[in-house]
Length: 507
Image (tube, rainbow, N blue to C red):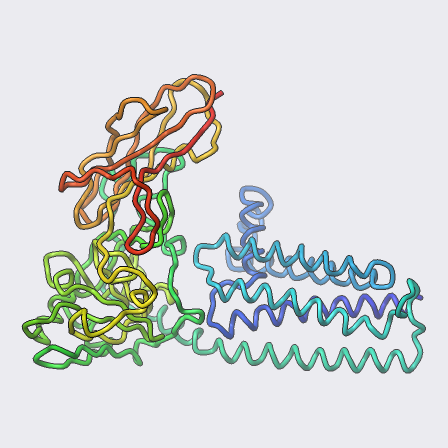
């Protein structure tokens, strides 16, 4: 019995390791950033922040702090799967339950990180499936079918177990090696990215841009919290020395730029808010950053735009396309080939080494990541990726606003309640924001300071509430005099409309 329990525990340990390796190998294979183990370690560190984790960080430093958390997560998981292995003769159903719980923890930890991608989610799923398959494979020879007692461990049983364990170890080693080799390019590109010394700044937020309301989204969005929307399952990894941008089509002179060609030009830097067309009313698919890059109008002027051109077809390294009106790339806005974000070279997930940033247009018609091709043409000669799928051909950002404080469903004290949120109308500008409590009169909010019309703005105000349920609504008016419509529409084909409203309870 003791010998069998030892082998069952070993089967559990091998099962746990197998799932960890295949999960991480999947993340490496698809060039993703967040694996389940590191994501869980981050979550644990956040939960313990201010307590033991902070003391540990002071003692060993931030690098070893994270490593020790990762090692702790791995040790806990291996111990848990070892215990699950010993239960194979009595409660075989328990294994699947534990695997699903562990997988759920990994999935939640991955999804809470803004820079996680679908590949990270797939990595968690692969790990759970591996656990279920390997567990059954390894415990099979050690359990008598239809009986609660363990099988007799004789030479035949031992050989069967060792054979399966060897096959498992070999398969896991191969998958780990393949994943590690596949990640080599990303690691090389990350190293090249860190080695860049660019003449960029992080920008200084205008005094008064942040109104100081607790719970408001920061006016500057940190890189690792900036929303991520793209169609690339495996993110392109392009070293600066390998990057090329071709400008062709209806131009007098076709150009091909290298990264060195680009960074030798005069640079522009500016605050620009980007928003996704699939951002629902009150949604969070929007962010504001300080971008560094090069004016696309200067590059197009150098190429010489021919008469009759109406669009620029942008193409990403992964084949994704969009169409941008010529006017938006050649007028006075800071439409740029961006190489940096908030004072750092672009993260890979945000388009490193070069992406397009165009103030005032939704990303699906302008903000191409991993940009490699610009074709000056007309809208009637091509259908871009999302146009083929029923979305609009051209799509300026709509005037919108949202409530962030209090959150929907929140509980507050009665009396004076501080409220606030954000509003945006990129390249048009917000003139005023108004809020309405319980269907009453509209009250004009206080607005934060902004550098120009290409960023969002914070708004704040106070409401007097009695105990009970309340309903708060917000609307914005842009600098053309247009006030948001109350009519709710879907995000397809050109962005959602409607007022954002939330309910809260005062006590």
